[in-house]
Length: 280
Ligand code: NDP
Image (cartoon, rainbow, N blue to C red; front, side):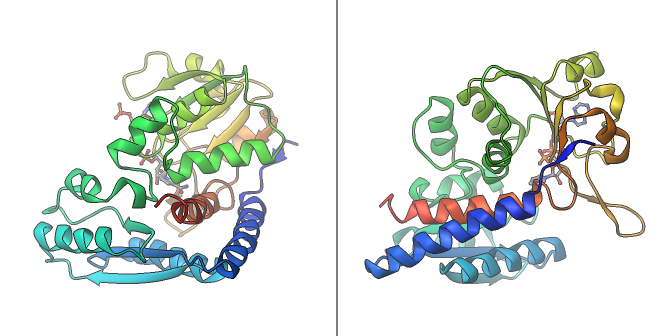
């Protein structure tokens, strides 16, 4: 049986470490505050926002909540971001995505002060990652690096294949693996012979957004498989982009869904919030 990479336990350990750090910071008079902005009331976004606020409360980070109506204009949202950028007591700003269609996400992301961009989506932070300089890193891929390291899985020198090239998962994932000295291939919807490409991987990271697409035909015997996908099937059961039951017997380690990558995203967001307090 493969090693089951326990994202729940690892994210719990990270949150406990951060909680201790925040207590020490509070003793020195440093408070951390995250502003969370949601536009509209998409139920999935409301769950994510609720979980982020809960994690803040657990760790000891103050959170400010802005729940704006669906018809909020882009100008109104940009004005609020301007106010939050100027507020000294706010260390981090998180605008929950997706935004309603009449608001341009890129414009909103660029409006956030890069020093408060705890999601790591601002082009300045993405550029810093690209050239190996300090900055905020997108939470899901940085959580995956933590999962690998804390599970004792060596990255340096490994063949890593990332399936998916989105700005929030695939691309930063590839850059982070490169930073860890892996040999990285990025595959996407135009990749030819995806099965053969995926089979080269010692570490296969799957972020395609297609339920159970990756079966054992894509996986080399003994590979480590990281499943970023989150889906709910007809009977409301969660699954990932990887067909877990089919793949688990052939790999050496695998992340389950739920309980793998998912919990790490919030833990790394909290990590970025704590880091933001020293980035003024
Ligand atoms: P996107 O839809 O933005 O990107 C999907 C990527 O997969 C694209 O680069 C696309 O290629 C590629 N792709 C799609 N179909 C195929 C195919 N048949 N063969 C090869 N490549 C393909 O998704 P995200 O990166 O935002 O998210 C991916 C998954 O991860 C989703 O299930 C999402 O819900 C989940 N997710 C989970 C998070 C967590 O906290 N666990 C956080 C963020 C996302 P192309 O560029 O050519 O179109």
